[in-house]
Image (cartoon, rainbow, N blue to C red):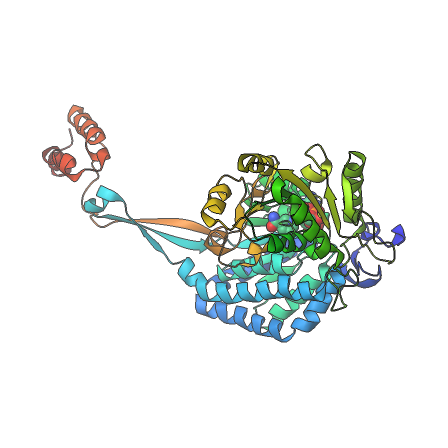
Length: 527
Ligand code: NAD
């Protein structure tokens, strides 16, 4: 493919161009939104939001469920578009994008009211003083979503649904590599009856993302690379705009000798090569216990060799093209670095040469170590480096030897042991006998630690990122002055000192020793 066709070449234009990574052919264009247009979109969202927030959860859910209905009816067309714009197999467009999105729509439409129900707080002895406290969850206003290209439907759509159900309006800035899917998402919402202004799609590149931050939305939900995440956090800090950062990963898979070997091998292959390895939770490092390593690697190779690579639109293809040339080059660099440092290539190890698009062969490496880029930096491509270990402690140490902490997995038939090890691994999610897929569970929180970012999306924790918890405190005894109000005196100081030693223990009995002094202060003159 000639470099003239790379999207980066078009970024100075007024449009972003969308390419089919499997063929290199242009499939459509979208506007490169200017800062002015982004500001207008945020303004529109701000004007529309109060009306939307004034609706009941039930009314908002009706629009989400109607959107879901249309998406379900149009899933084949949508899957084809996803496959063409990303290169992924249609099967993955459905299983890894459309299914989780429909599930999230169903879940949040039905559960948001319950998850955001006002909560009473137990305030201890203050309750006996006629006080009560509760939390109400209020929408933030306008949520800016900046999303990547690897799951161009599921990643932003879930966040759009959560933000809307929480009563917010949204401006979505999709990746410049996959603008058409977001435009399609916006179109489905519009046809489902979402009132104007509530979901605005600002297509464009990094400059458009930057403009969205500068337009002073109320929160930025960012998903993308660590480098960009840091830039986003820095830009948002100028306005004190809160940010959720869902960044990269270098996710480890630990296979213990008592694991179901056959399934662990299949999981490793799917976890490393699904979506051409371009998932933030892809298996990027595999650690297998020495005693079972030869057998495990043999099974991994058999599975890998059986995979069919090709155009994602062919239904029997397992591994599609990578999304873009830059990403493919990173993968090639990592593999070359590993080879130069002594890694053995047991499968793949090169660009898929027989095609026009951005294909990299599913690659299995052994003889790898932590001095190699392939075990340190996010590869984000179809590469499975396998390293051996002897003890559990060693495996945990290797898994934690990373700047990232998104997900990890432990494979063992001994669930208690799996849980024990899971709790020692530094990651936002640790799966026992599973890989990758929990982003697809709407109910569970998603997010990382260390350089994988902060904040959460999905589940109740994700929903709470999109609201502001407002504390409402009520004093029913409004006719009584508080003990701690003016005026002060030696007597008052003695009472406060008594409060320090008795009230703060939480013991009613001990506090009651102060009742005479309290009554004098409440009902008598204060001097
Ligand atoms: P990227 O960081 O290059 O781009 C992400 C988005 O940020 C794009 O929409 C881009 O246009 C925008 N952007 C770029 N510069 C910007 C700036 N200065 N200000 C504001 N916005 C800007 O990431 P990518 O290459 O699109 O995606 C791949 C990365 O995303 C990988 O590192 C992957 O691990 C990560 N990812 C993480 C998760 C997760 O949930 N943790 C999920 C998917 C992908």
